[in-house]
Image 1 (tube, rainbow, N blue to C red):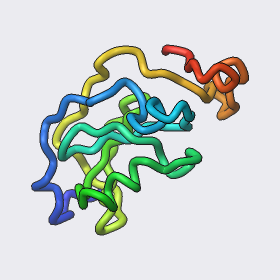
Image 2 (cartoon, rainbow, N blue to C red):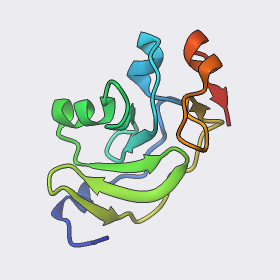
Image 3 (tube, one colour):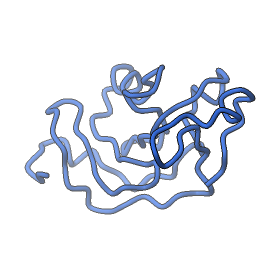
Length: 120
């Protein structure tokens, strides 16, 4: 990881706007992992998820730094420089994070069928 990314000055202490991917929750879709925008608090799904909303948020807003947020992992990524970055702090969860994937990387069938994620 690096702290030499020139975009680290955009990192803010944020409050996650939702408990899951904002767009997936609205669309009734599912995700694999969550990413938190460290400029505004938007919660989006990762690039392994069908909709890739965190990356779409970057393209729409140009907010460069995200935090791994499922569960809070403490690592950061700069979309502009395509590097992992050291974050000054780790964002706390606001509540249980909905899960569609189990600890072995498998879809949770009941969660997908009803699009009601398990709360962890």
